[in-house]
Image (cartoon, rainbow, N blue to C red):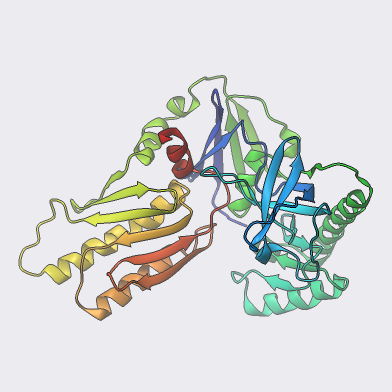
Length: 380
């Protein structure tokens, strides 16, 4: 659980809702949710496997109401072989983007505040942010609660709870899963059967459920769906971002050019396949030592890149063209710093290293739509 107070700002627009997540008054992420897309991350569906399998890599799934998704082979249950026309429980793992249907998984997660119940995944994992002795204690106890074929993920927030409270939540989440499984056996049509969180609550959940939070919106929401210790403020302003002085930061995050304090800059370009980030020395004085100057600029750029990945909700493959450096120790140090700077990102980031062409590759887990996706939609 994050101890930093968080604020979620929701502004209703003509075609959807844009959101800003603030920590201690500073924006750390922008999000966008389109009204046209009612299939959202975490939604659970009873879907029907369609006959048109895609190149042996997965199946398309009818979700009902004219909606469909794609279930890759690696996200199917290992103990289950799907068949055409079969009805199964699936969960939305990634939202629709770039003209692609939502990506689904059979590895269902029923999320709570302290743990995540896994009805079809037989393993128990514990947040690495918890102390080793507590991790082993939780893993042993929760494993005892799981029936064969079940599992759980113990979240960081569990470290502040007693075992009785965690057991109570485990039973509650297991009850939800049992109801879903019974429903799946008795339905005769495809439909959504559970939306675990509202938009605001989902954003707080993805950012480790702070101890205290505030939701500000220019439209009324179901306050009962908000987490405990969350204050709701209704502001009847059509341009809520402007009213709260967020508009300039939002517009800056839509621009490809990002200035750095040193006089250097980033250029962020989106394509459907990947995001390319170019580091430019700009007006920085080079003097006589290029290696030292390049390393210093690259360090500054790495810090800003880690910030921009989260701010713009950039997901998928990212290629970075840092300034050229000759010394291996500087290259290794830069990779280490970039890896450390992205460790606290709520979306997992994996830094792969330098390619033969001297580019740095990384991947950031993509779940929901951010500024990158909105930019591409509006460009098309």
